[in-house]
Length: 180
Ligand SMILES: [Zn+2]
Ligand SMILES: [Zn+2]
Ligand SMILES: [Zn+2]
Image (cartoon, rainbow, N blue to C red; front, side):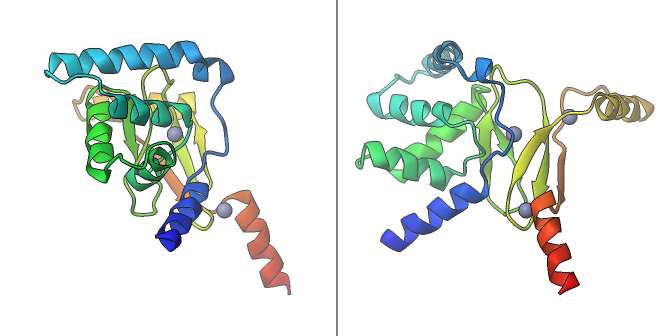
């Protein structure tokens, strides 16, 4: 199992967010609100907040990152070895339903999740070589998407825009290689 953990850790670093979100939004106040939203959501579905569910929620909310279910499972296991993989996967589904989590695609073939509740809309620029992902938003592009949808008679409720390529660091390495 040691080998697996190592692999997951490497994957976690690969998917880490370069541009951290504004500090004010990641404060404890928001976490409390997110927790309340989640508790209300599961209560409406007849579930109760258990200690394990609370732990998984906390571990997810603590990390401003794009986490895969395996990475979250690994994080939770460091606090409580008795939590099962299925519980973590089920929690991710519930957090998505409750609009606390949003699924993102970073081009590595893994389903990844980031915080949604209380976080401003953003798009992603993703490096396919090192996995560095930054969060970006451009008012002109957002407006063009609205215009495009209207042109086809659609009214937009949301979108995901993930742009793939090479980051400045990987481009630099590429240049060094070709100049040798
Ligand atoms: Zn956007
Ligand atoms: Zn890169
Ligand atoms: Zn993001």
